[in-house]
Length: 132
Image 1 (tube, rainbow, N blue to C red):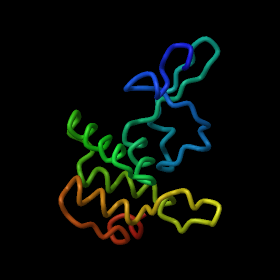
Image 2 (cartoon, rainbow, N blue to C red):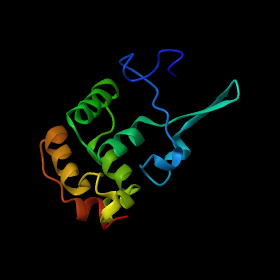
Image 3 (spheres, rainbow, N blue to C red):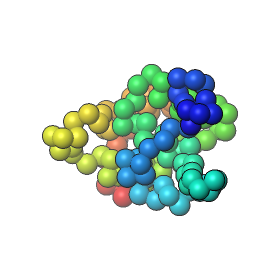
Image 4 (cartoon, rainbow, N blue to C red):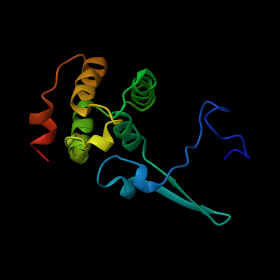
């Protein structure tokens, strides 16, 4: 990616290279990913909603901006669509082990996201966790 100037420090829209085992999203994210092989390299392009679900773990300002951009440009996900999507990511809501402390608070971040995007509160346990 560096050779072609497609890294985060060189362009607004970039390709982030990471191990598939390091990507944390819904349990079925691979089913939505587009896989392309070029010149002996395998590229897996993750669906935008799965990227958003992974951003919810950190939820910095740039992550909130990503949610707003995707919704502004596509009209999706709607509140109900994203609830159904997060139900498939229920493992992200499990309590953290000490060595995972760098990951954010999914419950709190989901509350913040709902206030920001849909101007309302959400009962995460009732709408996402218990349903799964």
